Length: 502
Image (cartoon, rainbow, N blue to C red; front, side, top):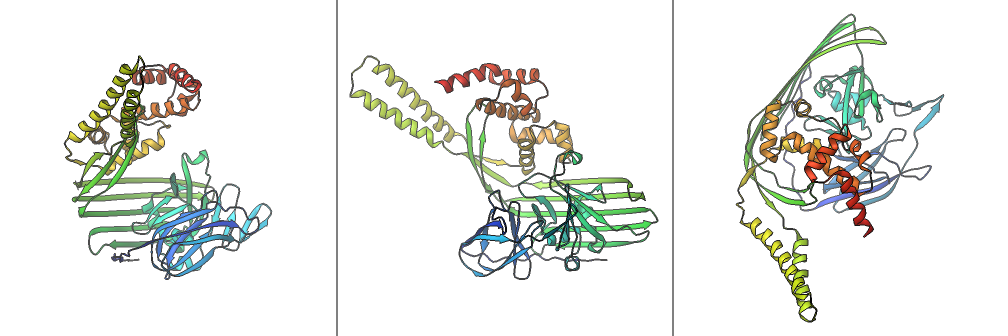
């Protein structure tokens, strides 16, 4: 039995936040090293923050406080490099950092000294004895291995991909949830197969991590992994067990995550580019509220492995996510468009310049200037007259909106979104309507038409663009475009072309 009690500590706040940046290159070719995992740790190896290098090999870590740190740079095929940063008090530019090649080629397979084997479709990563010794579960071990693009949240053991994208977890080839990874004992993990370009076999996954674990014929294990905050109702409770009998394996895991916060609030600034070409820029000033969430996940699985190349797997999963309270509020206000005031100024300057000249159309032109100025002023007067009452902001709907904005090209529906976020479709529809004043379907169409207009202005033909934005056929796209824009896609394309010519 493994019992872990983690107590949260309050970190001191320093006046200055430091930036650490640099450029990573291949020591041999002097070319930029892309997707290098950059991890900042304390002197005693506690995770502080991390990022990856971009296409130019650059990285940046911000919001770092003064202190002593250890910077670790790792990437498949390179020797891990550690940089000691003692007593940093100001921004640091490490400039050029060279990584040494750590691999030797052998008949199409690359074996590195750090326990890595490279194949054309995946990397086989073997944990070291030290990494297994200091780790307590499969997630914790993954953090110690510092794989490229993999981001670990040590507070709640969440695994993600830097830069976004879907991460797919597997155990011995079968799909698994993060709770099942938490239940793995490091000593049972033989290797992790890392697919950073998995292909269509794994659906829309950006990265696939397949844990290859030992399967004893007899025996089993039972474990408890607990973490609890000292100053808040914040906890991570995991109970798991596994029993093996000959070629069969029975496993069960249960997770409970209570959250109960008082005085929580959110400050936010957001900008929306609407389908009609207008831009809405607004800020949210948070007000203290109460939020509580209770997450319960149950997983039961049975695996039968007759041979090394065959596996039967059956899994039952039950998820529950209740929010008795999510009462924090925010005051939403629109930010005035500075371009409007510039245009008002230009209107009055035009009237002033016209007063010095004599021409027949002067009166008509002045009326046009005055009308434009009055329209813009009226817009902002009405905006300020609107009551600024507190508006409930549901973070779940924010996540749904972000998901739609990222996946609008895919076959989206209310049912699909409800399943993805483990919600009843009627509940999702109600919450979405309350938050956005639109239906889910209407918002998806709005997003697709907006992106279609953008692509058409860039020169993409309407007969092609409908596929790029998620419509199944041109007729559906045509009807939606005509209904929303009051002109056909071809007429809009012609208008854009004429505008460019002029």
